[in-house]
Length: 236
Image (tube, rainbow, N blue to C red; front, top):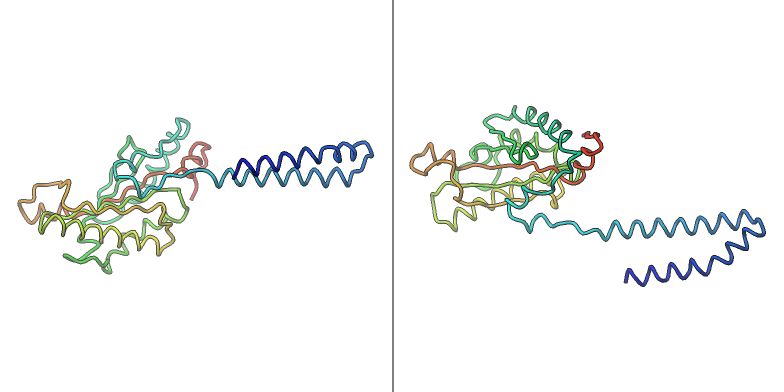
C-alpha cells in the first residue's frame, strides 16, 4: 500500500514538471509558489507516514531481564545519562525504607520497597501509606518514553506457587494502575508477578520472609531520554 502511494505521488510530481517549467519561463511567481507549496506538503506527508511506520518493541512481551537490558544508550549519551541518574538516585534515597542500586553499570535505577509499605498482608489493594511511597515516581511517568517503569512484585513461600504468583501479579498491576491514574502511559509501565522466586533470604524465619516480600521498581531510560542525553539536554 505504501509503495503504491509513493508511485502515485511520483507520477503526479512528474506530470507537474511541465507546468513548473512553464511557470518559470513565464516568470509566474504565483504559480511557482503554488507548486512549491504542493511539493513541500507532499514531502511532509511522507515524512509523517515514515514516522508512523516505525516499529516499536512491545515492552509487555519481554521478560523482566530483557526489558532491563534495553534500550542501550549511544556512547555519546552515557556520561550525561549517568550524571542525570545519579541525581535521581539522591532524590529517591529520601523514600523511607527503600533500598537503591544502579544496575547495568549505572544506566538503570533499581528501587526495592518492602511490600508491607504498600499492602497489608495477603491484600491486593494499596493502602493509605502507599501513596507517600509511590508519589516520588510520578515524575518518571509524566513524559512518555523518558523511562520504562518495570514493576517486579515478590512474595515469600507462604502458600502454593499458584497462589503466590496470583498475589504478586495482582500487586504489580495495582501499582501499575496507580501510576497510570497519575499520568503514566501503560505502554511504558510493565508489571511482573514474580511469585516466590528469587528470594533474597532463605524463607526460614519471619524476618527473612519479610525481606523476601518486596516490590522492585526499575527505572530504565527510554528512547526519548536517551536522545536528550546524547544532545546533553536532559530536562524534566
